[in-house]
Image (cartoon, rainbow, N blue to C red):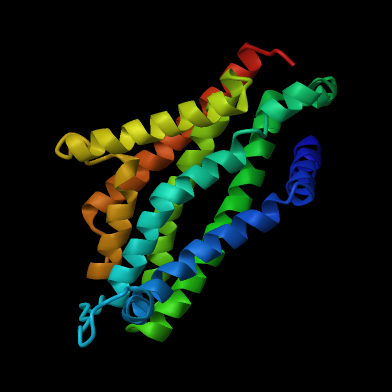
Length: 258
């Protein structure tokens, strides 16, 4: 446990020194607040910059606060996933390239402790970042649109955050198998993208898919309660994430090359 805590502390210090703890929350918060602000002020923006003829009247249906938050989660699913992969892709490969991994593993450190410290540290940073972004967007949504209860916001955030857990697990698994950052990012995005495409093409057979997390979080916002399908998707996501983590530990130990 002592070695694990030392490694975890090292990971957090490195993330702070390379600016990840700063730029990632800021970018996600900008994404989060841009959705409610742009929707609310869109008529004024078009009126000023739209080059519309005189007398033209702009009428947009006002979305509900729930629809605004669903749109924000859609942004997390595309731009956010890319940011998550980019933030995690180099946590192992960079230490391989600069030789520090050899020094770390020369000490009494197990593969489980090493991979576990990477996983926990990156997950903490990403979850804090997306939580800050989502809470900020929820605040502006309440301010500009209708009120959404704190309970609904927390429940939808919890369900969607499991996608972040999966992204971290998949990216770290790929990172144990590859050395190039570009390759790690490409393969990770390909795997996650393939999962999303298959879920869209085969909804009947992919009801368990983690790619349904955004839809389940949206249902919570709209219906105010967890559905039976939500439990299925949450359980499968946790199971797949645990399997990816276990495989990452196994492959790192099996194919040790520092």
